[in-house]
Structures are given as C-alpha cells and as structure tokens.
Image 1 (cartoon, rainbow, N blue to C red):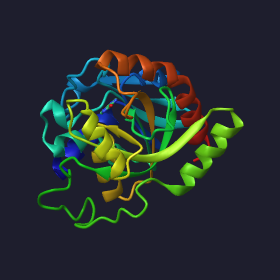
Image 2: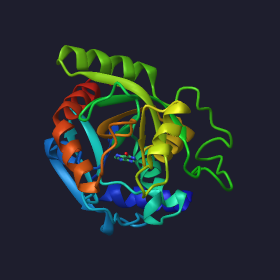
Image 3: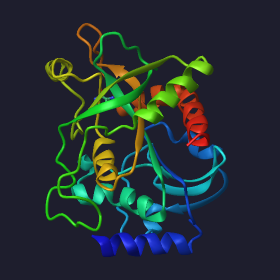
Image 4: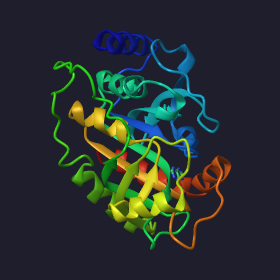
Length: 269
Ligand code: HPA
C-alpha cells in the first residue's frame, strides 16, 4: 500500500502538484467549484498510476491543482464509490495520496438524502458526526507507518472548522443545517422503511460516500470538514420517486452556497 501511495505521490509531484495546503473532494453535481481554481493543472484519473477510474455520470474524474481561497489546493472532481466495485482500499487511495502530497486539511462534499423532518431540498448541512454502515476501509493488516491500528473517532469532523464555517455562513446569509451523515454502500436509494430506520438510529442525512474517506483521513491525523447538500427527502409523507439525475440537478442548484463557504473557510485555515 505505502509503495503504491509513494509511486502515485511522486508521479503527481513531477506533474507539478507541489505543496498543496488543502485537499477538496467534490461530490455529485458539486464539481462547479473546480472552475474557480486559478492557474489550474489538471490530470485525468486515467493517467494517474494506481488511481481507479470513476464510472459514475456527473463524476468527471480529474485531479486539479491550483489556487483557491488564497491557498494551493488539490481538488478531486469525481470520487470513487464502494458500489462501483472497487475494494475499500482502492476507494481511499487518492485520499492517502493527498496527505502524502502534504495537505493539512481535507474538505469534502456530497449529495445526500435528508431524513431529518425539518430539512428541505437544497439545504446545506455541515456534517458534525457520522454513522458508518459501509465496510471499513481500514479492515485488514494495518501499516503503522500510515496510521495506528485503532484510530480515534471522537472528533471525526474538526470542531474548529465547523465553528468557522458556521460564522462564514451567517455572515453570507447562507442558511445552514448541522447533523449526522449516515453512509450506506448503495447503489440503491432507500426504501421508506430504511429511511425511517436511519432516522431512528440518529441520522440527519444519508448517502453513499465521504465516510470511508474521512476514516482514512483520520487514520492519518488529517482534520476533516464535510458538507451534505440535501437533494431529496427520506421523510415519511415526503418521499418521492428519485433518480441520479434529480440528485445531480438539486446539488447543482445549491453549489454556489457551498463553494462560498469552502472558499472562505480554506482562506482562514
Ligand atoms: N440516499 C442515498 N444516497 C443519496 C440520496 C439518498 O436519498 N440522495 C443523494 N444521495
């Protein structure tokens, strides 16, 4: 694993990805932020050694390095999902590479279903904690050079970053929610009974990503900040037929608010 990480890291350094301070993972319909990166260097995932190739529509599959919020950043436009058939280790290799490139913070976004009955479609939810119902990407032999066997998860989402983001949202008049994100493997959306169950066990939003990435980031001691864009509702009486295209469309509509928060947050970290 470490050999693969080093090989990929060296490849990207020689492509000019030097000393990024922040990593950004852009979720479904949320790739618009990438266009705001100045002086971009772009590499297709298919050209990066050891990177899996993204297969989902709306996930372009590019790594972009450049200036954003006054910092050098690396953004993943398109991520890898467990449901695509990759092993849990493959899904998270890019996150490990970002850390080895030198990022100090990881910023993530996703499109998610809202199971909190107070939520509305288009809401931006800052993730304060998660419930993992996916296979854990740290399963298997641990490499102590990367991180400890039993990583702490008491503060998976950095409290200081959450506080700063809440202030930024307030200052910009962006309505914000906070809550707990639950990760399932997908690729099916939930049945009404499953949405209800996820609400009962403590979730506010549900989706098919982010948590494996946060787990490996925390394994390496990397502080994380993540937001869900609520693209549909898993609330009794409000559940409607849903497609991936609808998720994409709703995420795109809320993208500007999320990009503003990320820009200002990265500027102050
Ligand atoms: N469930 C799971 N994943 C999702 C959803 C959902 O309702 N919406 C967007 N991603």
